[in-house]
Image (cartoon, rainbow, N blue to C red; front, side, top):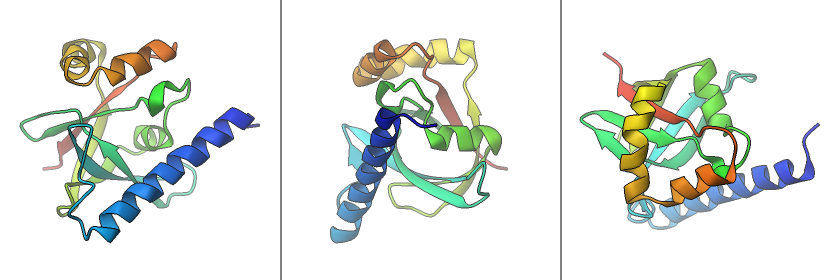
Length: 149
């Protein structure tokens, strides 16, 4: 059974996602594609239980060539975000960058060596992620999104 704190944080994350979409809609896409100095991407995963398409707005603190990096921080919560659990179950995702067309991509969790290389690059530019890591005992995963084909 979910705790009250878990339910509350789920409601907060959903409300933030809804508010973000409202800003995009009201500004006709002129505002909302950047947050905290990072590009915003729209990630579509397949629900691990429902099988339905689930879309969420996320920031990407780092990219290399065509690889996009996401941080499954959930604000330092002790639980992984639902979007992360979904892509672990089904790594075929779609990504729209800054409101562009959806592109099929494959998601994978960075291995230890890759995370060790990328984490300092991310936290040096965006120290909030280091703060999130200090709030939890879980190792916050980095997700690598790569184009299909």
